[in-house]
Length: 92
Image 1 (cartoon, rainbow, N blue to C red):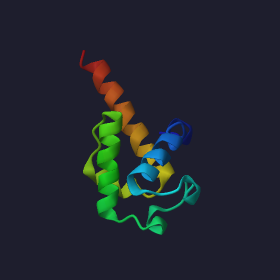
Image 2 (tube, helix red, strand yellow):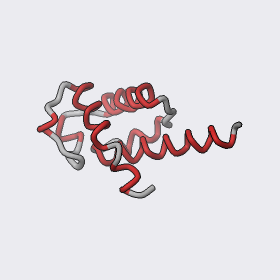
Image 3 (cartoon, rainbow, N blue to C red):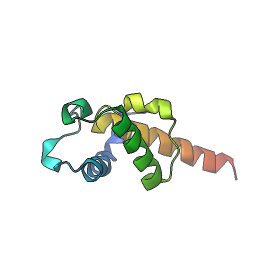
C-alpha cells in the first residue's frame, strides 16, 4: 500500500473523526496522534466500526493498533477497500 493510495481518503477519514468525536477540523492534521486528542483504545474501536459502516468494509479488530492518526487510519481503510474489491472480483 502506498501513501498515495491512502491519501485520497484523508479528507473523508478526517471528517469522520471530527464528526464522531466532536472535534474541530482545525484541531488536527493527518499526522496528529489520536492520543494527543484524548482518543483511547475504545474510541479507536468505535472509529473502526464507524469506518466499516460508512464504507461498507470489514476491518479486522487487530487493525485498531494502526489507527494512530488520520494517515494511518486512511491506510487501513485503503487496505480494506482493496481487499473488498479483490474479493468481489474473484467471487463472481
